[in-house]
Length: 552
Image (cartoon, rainbow, N blue to C red; front, side):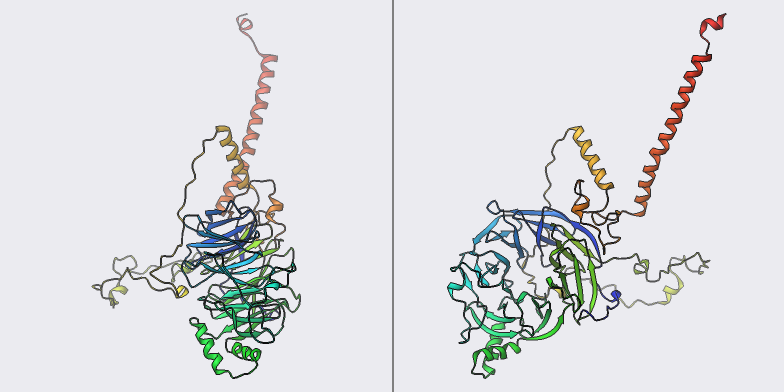
């Protein structure tokens, strides 16, 4: 719960401060690939930027000349070779990441707020789209065919899709935006509706197979699985984030649903669906702010599923709340005074990436301190000098202490340097499938410039490097990351800004200070020389002798 005592932050491996920020146009939504090496960001001009997250540079830009509307969501395929982009012009575009070419483009009748590729295929052609004012649908990107999914169970219990008149024909939006997501391997779809019910749907037959009512009965705005598929998160209009434990097997979920359906004997279909639902999901935790009663934005799990994060939906606030899975609030991250619109956790590392209303992407990381004992376990930090008496054999090639030890290792054994150990974080990886982790850098051609332009651009670069940090007015990038006075756009509106800013070292600050002092000293010396020359001129004019005077 939110009112639980905040535990010691040293116990958890989670972000603490803004490390840096990314800037390119106005970014609206973000998504990591499976390894967390590439970050895709959808922009307001219809382009999709792929950032190399290791170098924090732009690796590729995907831009469709037919699309200039804002991007609403981006989604990677399982092995990172394709990206699905949904836009405000009702389009779904599938891209080939390496070549940067458009594979397919499909236009729906409603604006898709979110679109997710089928997670079970390396080259998926099916996607799950959640339109603005109609039921979620399965879209075949190759043919453009759509299958509308049911969003409720009717009283007669058939659990089918809504009738066509409820989709588009009457001109009024009959549905609130409905959340939906695939399970880990894409066997079934979990739909959260406006009645506060979680429906387990067989998307191939468009039939509801199970139903789980939530305790609040409020509209479900977000629904998302953890990376390992063991937990399901819902975000409702009653200002509560709920975590459910998934009781179904990760694979062959439909077969397990068939078995559950046979074991439960209930004549009323709605009650039977609830009975099956109780065997599918069980409530694990609830998170809410009992004091401020705030709504949550873009909640999600950490990469290992141990942490849950949610952004404040309040205007003018960039707050990120971090809970552990037991329900304790462990950290509140406070960013600049800009509304938060999207949020994600790095798949592997303790890094959070958030998107502000101004279109900047902030990278939150741990505030690491130097600890030399981590490099040498026997290293001891001293507060003051101590006299040290060396051992007799300290500088011998083979100390006496090592002569006594006997090595248990067999030096004749071959060392295996070829076999790759399986990473538990990617246990579902198919080793036969080549995964795209990085994109090759494409060098930009050199543009010849005039010397004046070169000098001008270099002076601008110096000015931008000497200007204050975009994160605080006093010029410290990370100091005071919890309470930013204003946004980067407000402070650096008229200056040239780089895409990345890091905190300068102490040595660098000293050198900058010396550069500032040196011109002052030299200018003082030159003024003295000028005064001396003026005195010499006056002296020669008043009391000097020319050649004739000397001869006389």
